[in-house]
Length: 424
Image (tube, rainbow, N blue to C red; front, side, top):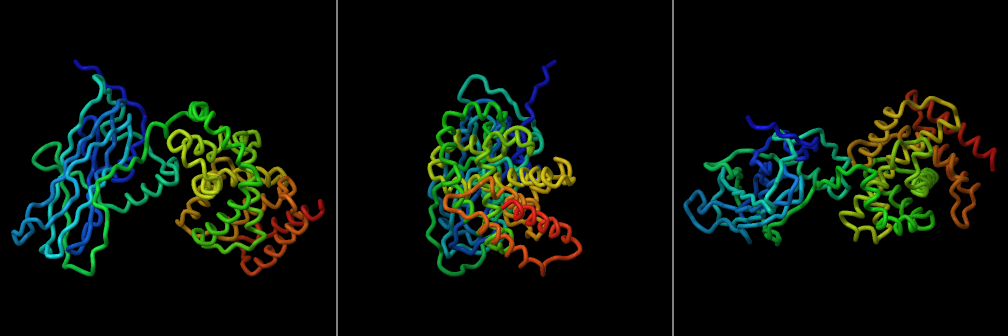
């Protein structure tokens, strides 16, 4: 009688992309897609092999690419690839994908159902390679746990149609694609195969352990993340993100106060929990620690760091802080932590371009909490009364948007404005 294997509760990243489709090869799980699935003759395509390691050891995954030898008219040499093999070194439990680009010549016979194959060989790099991931993939995976650059890769994979179809051999995955009649000039592209990592065990590290491991690298970065260096990059990011992704054109007085709240959230730093807004470490700080361990070079450019890599996590944390600020000032019930968190996620998703923002989501709590905190975060040579007047101008310009659904928020904004003006 064999002993039952004990699996760690790792997230099923592959299954979140493929809808559960996978081929289980023991130490790895795989699925295959072709991008795009249809292309005119002469145009580039690529095979995408999604790979999810099941072991707590380093392994090599060797991929051999096999294209059709002839087209449907029996003509050889119609399918082209720069390399037919790639060796990928996978870290424990790592998830990523192999991209094997290929192309056809313009004379390739158009047809449906051309077949390509990828042969997969796994090599253990140590004597022991214990399986720590369940054969079914694992538990729930939240894409928001990924750094932004990885999240964009993840989103691109969601658009593909993956298959778990095997050929005559267990380690052979096959996929079908269509060639259409030629159309226009083919773009010049690099046909070199590549590996893109999506997820590693660093993403699963306990926050305490992650922060402890990254502390030495993060400390000098935190020293740079002060209002004098981050406010204006954040202001520019707020204006562009809300306008372009969120679909809501901000007034100057709104953008300034949202940027103030984001700056305050960053200045509070890892101690945001002491404000009562969250439990544990803020998301933006955890993300910073992840970047410090995985891509430390990305920490050098402060503007790119705060306006791109940390921005959406900072929006979430600022929303949670904003609710706490407004609730403390007004004494109103603004929902449970779970309800606030769900609302914050809605704002983040809207700023990723997945749903438009409205007056309520822009004002409650981000703009109003920024207004309430305006005296707490004063910039060099700033006239706070002038800044508040900018908000008043924006507030009055929004009157035409007010309806039964958002009238209460507009009234709250008016009361907050009176409170702030009385303190000047």
